[in-house]
Amino acid sequence: MDRSEAVRSTVSGPLAPFEAGFRVELARTGYTPSSIRGAVGAMARLSEWLEDRAFSSSGLTPQAVANVGIAGLRPVLGFLRE
Image (cartoon, rainbow, N blue to C red; front, side, top):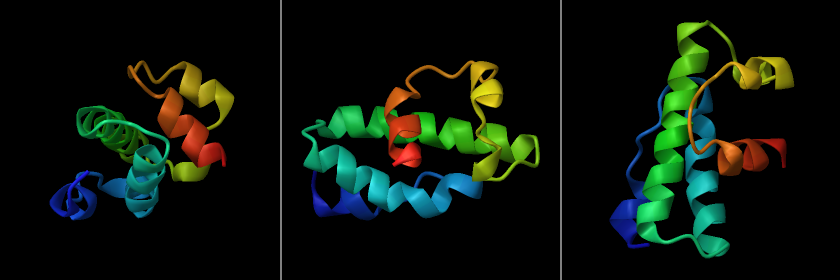
């Protein structure tokens, strides 16, 4: 991951504060730049979903997540649980 990839922000809303750490963790665990972009995109969609429903990140209950319908959330949810 190049420096511009690391600092470019694409997540807004309630999950925005987690984006930088998520990118670092993905890179540390061997994700490619394109895989990082995809995972951060899933985080951005999830954050929009939360914002549309006026939920904070604490609104990510197992019941809520079951109804999200966004592909590629496993890395995002794993990171947020940690």
